[in-house]
Length: 353
Image (cartoon, rainbow, N blue to C red; front, top):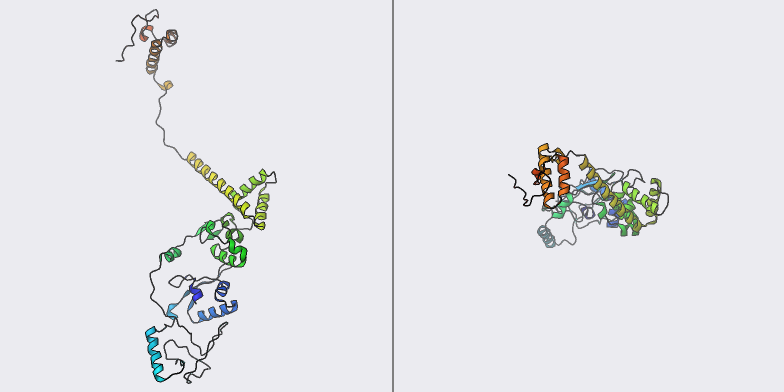
């Protein structure tokens, strides 16, 4: 039960370890673990919350109501002193009416002072044996901050897989190299249904989107196609998938990491382009109309031309000013020249009224 408690929240829920993991943790055989957990279910101590699926084991919770409370230390000492005063040599069997006792069949309960030991290993519910250490239910304490965060854990969806944590934060590479089976057990919990556990173990699980074995992320495929083009090799989608499979098969994680970095860049570019396209398609507010020279009224055009001609004359460009005045039908006197088109001795640009 201690091994199961390691996988439970503080309220006794969320127990979902595999039989193999409990066997590894306790040192029992898988058959023994199955037998013991079956007995715990029969006693009502362990309750199935969610049945097992193809990829996940049963989820359990502890049923504290079915637990026999362990006597406090003071109560234990009072009983021990009483036995010592009566001269008891060894701990007697508990009667069925005693607190926490289990009914005994096949044992002479009248022979006080005799206690049968319980064997470890696969237990078939040996009669006449009560639990050596009945569990005492302690008052529930306020869950720690870590426990609260764990119960509100976010689910990360990438393709067909829902991860229990960000896939790029999963680091089981060392465990994968030493014990792939144990690594797969953890991956089944972290990424249920993932068909590329080696990618999950090395932090690249999100680049497989499923549901079939060769359904890789489209940007990873494009990155591998570009790599094949650079090497002047066949670069079809099938060739790119073969390239990916060869890297996974050979454990070429350095090369695979580079391809994933390139795929991330392609993703970023595509996102920027998508945003730009959306902005271009979205309706824009009407701009403030700008009145150009062509849109001005005839009077405004004439006034602008006169002002320009006066400026040119002030800079000595009289011939150019006269030519433009003739084209626009502007009198020489309007731009500060004499009727003959000469510049007066004392020329000054009249102030605008």
